[in-house]
Image 1 (cartoon, rainbow, N blue to C red):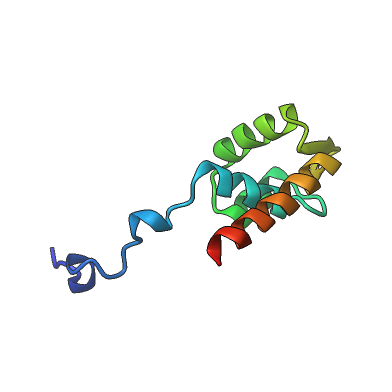
Image 2 (cartoon, helix red, strand yellow; image 1 turned 180 degrees about the vertical axis):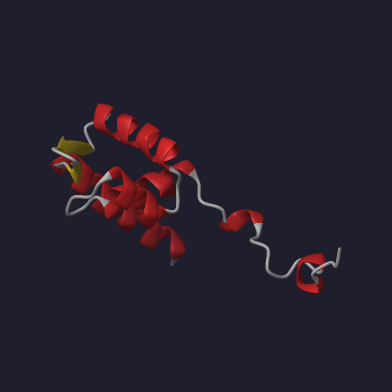
Length: 95
């Protein structure tokens, strides 16, 4: 089996600090559901498997950040506020 020289040198691999944390995944899910999205659409947009997406969606519904509307999940007012504050905080910390 041939070794990929880029991987052997550490190129092509994500650095540890590039991995998303729980808060970033939550913000990504809320952003994906901003105008309404199914579980499948959210999973596709945020690069998570369906069971993971469902687990996050259940959590976000309990916290009042997402609302179910038929087959779609949409941002609640509280979710919109969370997303605005998250982006402000992220911008503040990046400057």
